[in-house]
Image 1: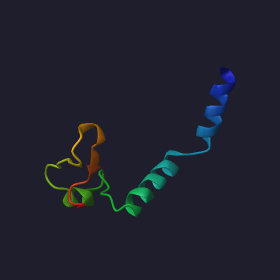
Image 2: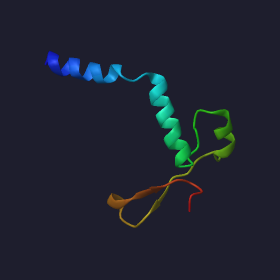
Image 3: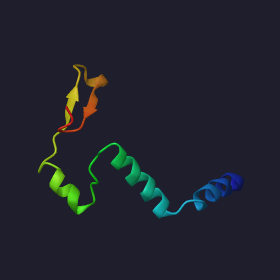
Image 4: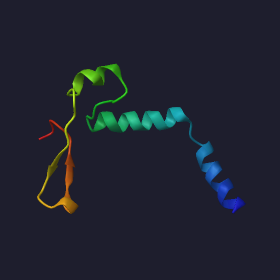
Length: 69
């Protein structure tokens, strides 16, 4: 059990919070998604975001971002 904990700790020690934020921001920008915690993104989002789904069955709902149709 201690070996598993040490293995996980060694993996997590390789990355800083800055590394995680950098990768996350890069992926959001690549997919042209709003940066939810920046001041500029507050201007991009509608006042109340609405969720829309494609398809008829509740179990097979596909999420669609507002304005991406």
